[in-house]
Every structure is written in C-alpha cells, then in structure tokens.
Amino acid sequence: MNSKLLSNRTSRNRAIATFAVVFAVIGLGGGLALGATNKETVKLDRVAQVAKPQQRQQTTGTISSGFNPQINGFSFANFTDNPNNTAVGIEDLITVFGQTSVCAQVTEGTCAPYKSATDFITKLRVELAKGRCDGLVVLASRLFQKQSSLTNFSSNATTTAQLTVSQVDNEVVYWWTTQILPGFTKASTETLALQPSQFADRIAQDIRSGAGSTIGIYTNEIGHSVLPIAIRFNGSLAEIDIYDSNTPGLTQRLTINRDLESWAYVVSNASGLETQTVSGNGSGRLALVAMNARQSTPTKYFANLDGATTSK
Image (cartoon, rainbow, N blue to C red; front, side, top):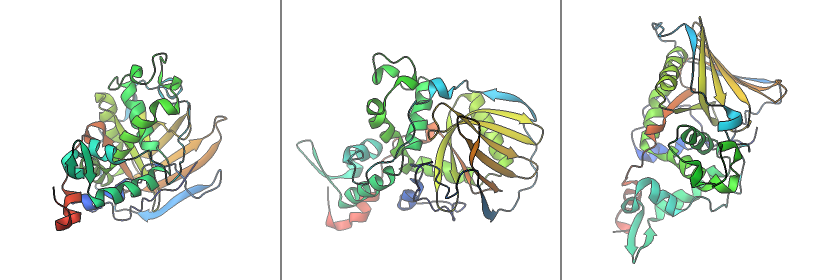
C-alpha cells in the first residue's frame, strides 16, 4: 500500500461551514498506508456513541452494479508522484471554480491568479503527490456508467483496463481535485455522522439506483477512497465488494456488522492472503460521496483571502 495522506479527521462530525476548511478534505488522494505490516490489524481507539437501532431496510439478498475490477477498473495501480509535480495547475482550479473565482485579473485571455489561489495549488500538488486514488475510482465509475467515453482517451481501447496512465492522468487529476468542492465536503460530513448500519443502507440505495458513489475510509491520520460495486446482506452482516485502485484487478471487501455497529475493511493480495485490515466502531470513519456532489461551484474564497491587496 503506498503513502500517507494529510487527512486528520478527528473533528469530522462537526459541520464544515466554510470553504476555508475544505482543504482538510482533500486527503483522499493517496493509498491506504495504515502504518501496519502485512497481516497486522489496525483498530481505531475511538468508539463513537451508538445510535438507537434503526429498522433495517434489507436483511437478505445481493445488489450489484455489475462493475468488474478486471474489466472496468484500471490495470495499473494508484501511484505516488513528485511533490513538485505540475499535474495540478491554475487551469484546473479555474475548471473547478470558474475564472472569476480564481483570477484577480484577466488580460487578453491570460489569468493573473489571486496569490491565495497560487498558494493553494502548491498545497494541492503536495497532496496529489501522495496518490490519485479518488480520481482513479471516480473516473473508473464514470466510464462504467457511460458518463465518460473510452474514445475520449483511446481510439483502440474497448475496456477501461486497456487504458494507460498517460492517456487518463489529466482527467484523473481533475476528478481528484473535485474533493475540494463544497458539495463534496457537505456530503462527506453528513455521511460521516451515519452509524455503520445506516451507512450500509445508503450504499445499497446508491448501487440500486445506479447513482454511483465513492467511500472514504479514515483513521486519525490517513484517508483512502474506494468504489463500492456490490453489497450482500446476510442477517446482521452487510458485505460490500470494493474496487480499490491500490490493488488493480482484485475485489476487496468492507464488512459491516449491523448489530454491533462495527466495520472492517480487509485488503487481500492476488493469492487471497490478507495483507491489511482497518476496523472501527460507530460513526465518524466512513463517508459516502455521490458523483453528483462533484459539480463545479464558484467561490469567493480566494478573493476574500487576498482582500484589498488584489482587485478584479
């Protein structure tokens, strides 16, 4: 598993009211580096208060999107980068927030960005260097749902697995940057408050409707983004099949015990041997973000930071 993320979420159950705090949410970029050696288990010390039992929406059966990691996932794994990379630039920020949000002045089509926007790009590059997991699973989902077209990346590829890093990286980076949007933050904050049993019901709803969503898995210091592709109910247990960009071609599993309000994400290698597990109880560690929460949104954040020192 590759690298650590700047994603300390000890206060995630509090509402995030301003874009100033949104940067804390971009830590979904890299791998699930849990600080544990193979076959070790990371258990979260935090035990949340358990909500009153909810009426279960489903106790048996399977709901599947049909996503196959060997075909619909990328054949290459999530990867780290140089912190001085130029993969994220002002153009990406303009795409996400709009020209007037980012540019202090525009002269003959050239953007003179707010200093705060330039500083923000530097921070984004550091985070992107730690991995692209969120962008990879979002684009894989979009290609599967026909929201993006394979022909935009290759005239020869017939499956996502046939695409290369160089063909898709720009688009992967764009979807990775959508983590800084207020809509992403709102959805993440709201679903972090759910108990595991409620979380399982939401995943079932999203898969059944075809809406598409990503799961954020958080410990005190790290975060990882994965794609739920199926869910099976067996009494108190809900088993969620996962596409994880760290393990291309494989299906991983997130298991939720709805009686105990506990969960465990188990990562296995190609031989089926467990390599890592992270587990927890109660709310505050699992987030679910629907694809429609990643819509471009203008902001005055950069202008407000620069204040009177910069004008349009």
